[in-house]
Image 1 (cartoon, one colour):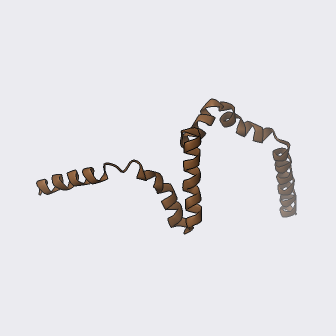
Image 2 (image 1 turned 30 degrees about the vertical axis):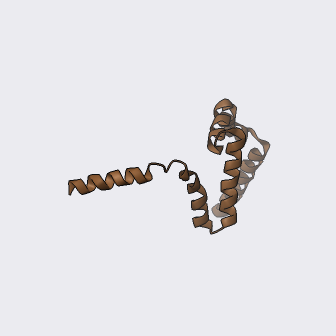
Image 3 (image 1 turned 30 degrees about the horizontal axis):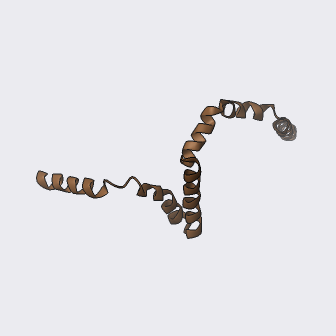
Length: 107
């Protein structure tokens, strides 16, 4: 029984040892299986390969580089949102609506 497991394990390692390159197709294969659109999955794979050939890095590596080189993007999004006029107006409107509902319910 142990020999069968060892032989089976060695067989899997030898046949699946070169699976590094085909894993690039996993993303588009998942896209195709979830959406059913060959065009969308082909575009996904093609754009990833185009970016990889142009920059030498995958899209995820490019994104990581942008975030690590520019920490202000990560750190100041919340601050910018809280200080924006749109956010202030939204909160003010919600407070006024809540005050109106409270006054109506207390009558």
